[in-house]
Image (tube, rainbow, N blue to C red; front, side):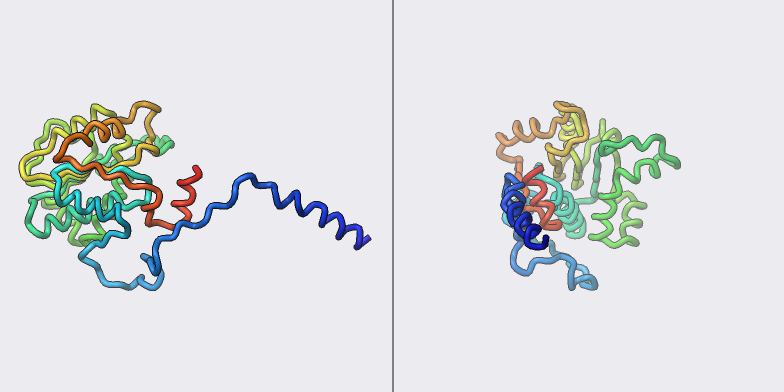
Length: 250
């Protein structure tokens, strides 16, 4: 009986070996020794942000050299964080007077219903990623003071209409959830001595198909010399290496 079972297992082995049509995707290497967390949990605050790849370097250079930059790419490539870090540095260097951050209040495939509290409390879940990045760059206590005196303003897209933003660093996050008309309205808010960065991933829009205007806006603005459109890819993901692998097959 044992000999027969061994023969049956051997006969099944070739079939099991070919049950997958596609070979496994290897983990995307992030670079020798690169690890943002392990062994560095107690590291001191780093004032200077260093790019982890060539496209991040291109993005940082573009934000320095152009009044308007569009950062287009998948989740986890550092678009929002690099934009906010650059905005905070410009504020600390006295190159701008204010930071204005905005993103659309669009739910990611869920209906949260009516949220309790004041208007600010209702908007907090949508704007939480911006608060997190700001807190990391300024510290929680200083961030509260900067928001209280108006130096840093975080607002939904709807509150941007009719404004002229002078001496500001403006970051529009999650722009793939904006329509063509909304992005056009935001672009025309740019005032004197200001910079604007628009970030988003056209492949992860929560709007109905064909409604997002980010891809078309980026395509049209590429022709203008004073505007930088930086395309990041799944090779630039700086989250867990599995994120890059999943984006390559999903």
